[in-house]
Image (tube, rainbow, N blue to C red; front, side, top):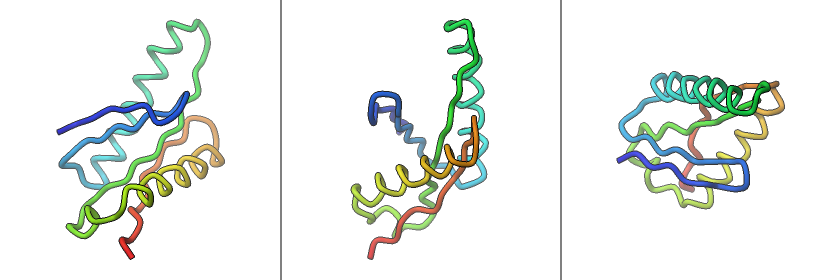
Length: 97
């Protein structure tokens, strides 16, 4: 099941099931590009989009508390934005312990 949710004023979470790290990176890049093209056209100017993804590839990754998952996403987003405009990346999920 895929889900999209608003995380804060200008941050959204997209949950895409059944993807490994490589597929998540490719999908995240495609989402970034799509948003930039459509939002830029609507706004009449360029739009900057940064993003981060977590790939849960091991069964124990699913046992990580939500607070740790959100903290890892937030930290990853800060890193992506620090690396420059329009940067997206996949980060490792936090450990459950």
